[in-house]
Length: 172
Image (cartoon, rainbow, N blue to C red; front, side):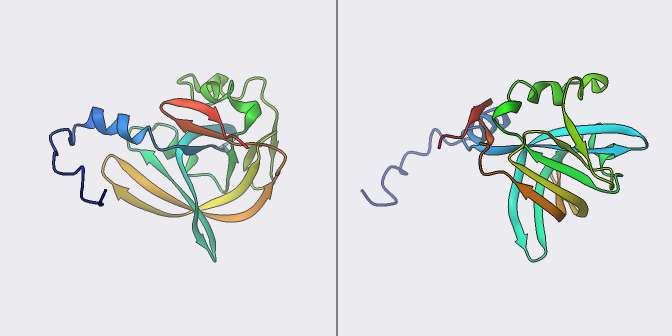
């Protein structure tokens, strides 16, 4: 079969936003909690659009923030942001961390706070202490590029991925 075979019937191709969301959900992505103390209050948002390797020198990562987010405008003012890649022990906490009720997001969670105010989740396979480097408009989102100031990783812990609208363990 050549690369062009199977493309002769484009009837099923669409740009419908609902279909696009469904199609995009077929691409597994990392899940991270971005958190910091802002004006004395712990603030967190969960992102499934997190990407590493944006740049290695200087080290940078990125994620997409929806324009409708009420958390990102607050979190973006933090001196530093803790990025915790969610791991095997966080699957039941992911919904709590992203709940509409901001008051209960950190309830019963073990965290570590850096001097910068960056907050990290205990048990995460990767911690990144970051600052906001760039923000680029991208449709109904902004692409946020974070500069990594410090990092820690634990090879013994497995990360979670977001796939088909479900959190799943990354198989070894």
